[in-house]
Image (cartoon, rainbow, N blue to C red; front, side, top):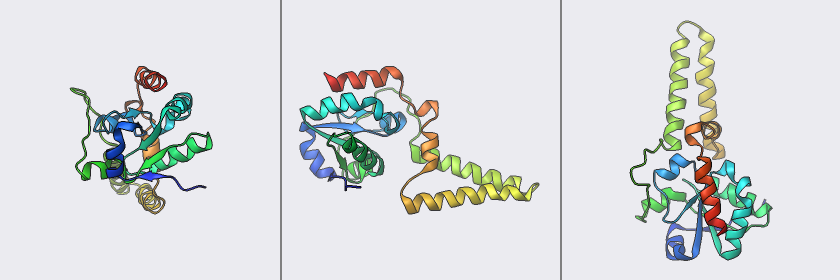
Length: 188
């Protein structure tokens, strides 16, 4: 596996006018604040967007972003496998905002919770359910233990299975019209 090329937030900010920014977070995460001019193509819709991404890459450099840099690195590797060159934002939108760079949010839009908040709610709810249910059925503690093990695995591997599952929920999916408009903008 080749290493992913990266740009720091400051490097990306200096070149933002010449980059096509692809945000691979869920629509809710994107709506909570994204780089100026970023196009939202969630990671699980990347294959659908290959034609548009190839067209955009032919016109200039692609910068792929997510919250931390993990999903954008995965996206860059998948794009490289398809012959599309892209760079990842080191530290993702978290580093971008921590350094004080501008983010955009849709005006008046109700935004779903960020993915990390959804994961915390789901994990906490499952652990609490397991502990409460264990008062009546002792084996229910296995639910809490399973979630704890998943969180440890998530930290060690910098992946999150629960986030992958939650990303498939309807409120975390792009509207077909939004994705179509994004793809059209990238090919024009």
